[in-house]
Length: 250
Ligand code: BJW
Ligand code: ZN
Image (cartoon, rainbow, N blue to C red; front, side, top):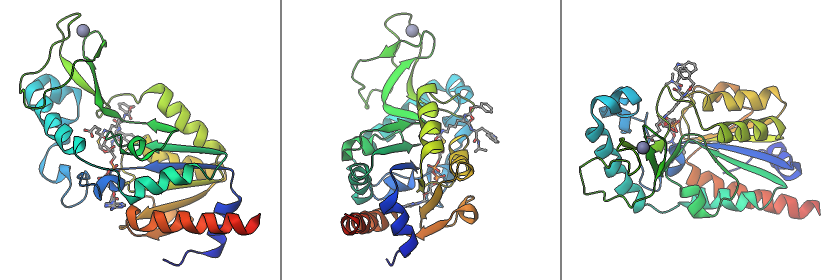
C-alpha cells in the first residue's frame, strides 16, 4: 500500500498515539465479528444474548453461548495486525490500546497499555454479590456455575447492552484520546457507544484520525485518512514505514 507522505510524517513526529480496535482486528484470527454479513448478529439476537434481561430470562442459554465462544477464543492466536500494534507501542512515548474486544489477543501479542472497554471473556463474577469467580470454567459443562459466597448466578465479566463500561477503562481511554496527536480507529463499525464517540472526541481535541477497515463505516466520512484494507494487511506495512521515517529523522 502507498501511504500518504504527510500521514507518515505525522506518525513519525507524534509522541502520543491512541488506537481504538473492534472485532475486525480479530477476524483474521478466526473470531467472528458482530455486524458483518457473516457476523454473530446476522443470525443471533443481541437482546437475548448480550443483555442482562436476556441472561435473567435464559441464563443457561447465554452461559452456553459464551462457552462456545470461550472455545473458539482459547484456540485463537494473535494475527499480524495484533502483532504490528504491539510493535507500534514500542515506537511512542505514550501509547494506549483501547479495545472493544473481549478476547485478550492484544495482550497475547504483547500490547501492554490496554484498556478493555467491554470487559473480557476470561474473567467471571457473581451477578448478585459481584465476587470474582476464579474456578476454572469447564466449557463442556452446560450447568451454570453458582457463587461459592452467596449462591448467585455466575456471569462472564463482559459488558452487555445497557450496562456501564468499567470506569477505569473508559476514563483511561478518554484521557488518552484527548491527549493524543494521532488516533486510529481499526476494525470497528463505529455503531456502539460510548466507544464510537472516541474518534470524534479525538478530532475535537485536535488529533489526526485514521481509520483502517476494508469497508465504509459510520465514521469514515469524518476520518482524516481512510486506509481501506484489513488490519493484518495494512498494519505491518504501516509500522515498517513509521520505523523507516523515524530512522530518517534521527
Ligand atoms: C475488519 C476486518 C479485518 C471486518 N480487518 N476490519 C444512542 C446513543 C448512545 C448510546 C446508545 C444509543 N442507543 C443505545 C445506546 C447504548 C448502547 C449502544 O451503543 N447501542 C447501539 C447499538 C445503538 N450502548 C451500550 O449499551 C453500552 N453501555 C452504555 O452506553 O452505558 C450507558 C447507557 C446505559 C443505558 C442506556 C444508555 C446508556 C454498552 C455496550 C456494550 C456492547 N457489548 C457488545 C458485547 C460484548 C460482549 C460479547 O462480545 O459478547 O460488545 S455488543 C458488540 O458490539 C461487542 C463489540 O465490542 C461491540 C462493537 O462491535 P465492533 O467491534 O464494532 O464489531 P462490528 O461487527 O460491529 O464491526 C466489525 C468491523 O470490522 C466492520 O466495520 C468490518 O468492516 C470490519 N472488519 N474484517 C479490519 N480483517
Ligand atoms: Zn455471590
